[in-house]
Image (tube, rainbow over all chains, first blue to last red):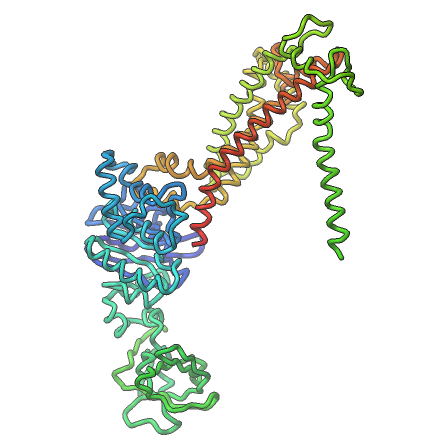
Length: 340
Length: 280
């Protein structure tokens, strides 16, 4: 179990991490969702030991690891750009850690060969061992980077936007593979990403990093349907967030969040009884294939989005520039009090 | 329109440049094949390899004494070799240090660079005075060696600095995260990747030291290096044996360059792979 408590890191005037409390349980695929610049890479670098926190403690199974040199922490790291060793072959890249690590290096060539081959077959690269790094594709490099880390059997594997350098097709496939590989290894993965779909797809648990803090850490479906605060909701890219006052006095005060897919649209004044509503101007629509997004502008300037599934259309025909009433079931709204 | 004027102009300029670059060397090479009774100028009386034989002591005794370069040549090569080793090691180490901004790194940088900026005559003279004051004997392996290092180290340092500038640190971090110690990481990852740069730094140090003149002049003592020994023969009278020697040393330098080129080619093939990795 990897535990961070009150971890802070500042760079001069800017605070990258501000008292992060965070737990990665055993044998879990943990996604960490954060916008670019939210300090998510910094968090990984602190855990790996490439940088030290200004305050706070990092520990694995109760043993403190902050302050230890990175090569003694027994934590794997998969880089966004893979950081493979360009002067070594695939097999040499993979066996590198076993051969040269400070703790218990393996010198028996047969054992090195066997373990390299078994881990290469685990990531689906049997027979690629003799290839040069330049002679394999992006997805294969990704797998070599993973294999190289896994062969050392670290206590936790950190993945820094591991799919960011891959094209969309490959990304979807690697998602499944990463999950399957992790389940076979029974080691915890901490996967950092800026993409909410990736975080929700991959994670057994998803944590949201915002403003230098972990604002929520939950199972993906819980997080998606019940964000605890405005920050978490905003990162999911599926929630309209607006002032309760827009819906009249019935909603009370504070900030309201309603999912894109739970808002209905009707002409002005035709809202069914008992449903909170707000008036907004239809801006434009965006066709995304199986779904269509419609954009509205509320009276205070807030941008609202409504998603419509082509198989079950529920929106009326709309004219750009016209006003419509957007309404939703009272229990579809999540209300947050305090600062937005 | 533009290229109709520009291209011929640049072509002529390039031709002239090459002519001035290689002209002296070509003249020297031609004159080295002068016959035994010919002088160090045109016309060529007869083609012969007499002066090459003379240089190597293979001729009958002649009125021209043999060029006293044997020992000084060995001395120069040895000195250049020592300088290369020390300067390159220093250059790599200090460039490695400059990868992290440390306190006083600004002044330290300029202090290192000063070694190649200060006029050689001044440094040489200063060193001569200093060694006199301290009662240290002047020698090619002592006072001259120190100045050669002071002179070539900044070049090696700058080459390595440029190499580290575009070095992707994440491969080192990857190695650390695999449990490999910093020292092993340098040996197994950093050094192989920067090796082409190290080769360039070595080539720089060697050639600069090999034909260093002004700094050596004041600090050499009695046993001369090659440039000084050759200069010494000028004061008597010039014979084509110097040209023959020039041709041989040029061939020697050329051999060094070819070795450098071959080694580079072998390692840049790997560097190209590295680049491919970034592009994905």
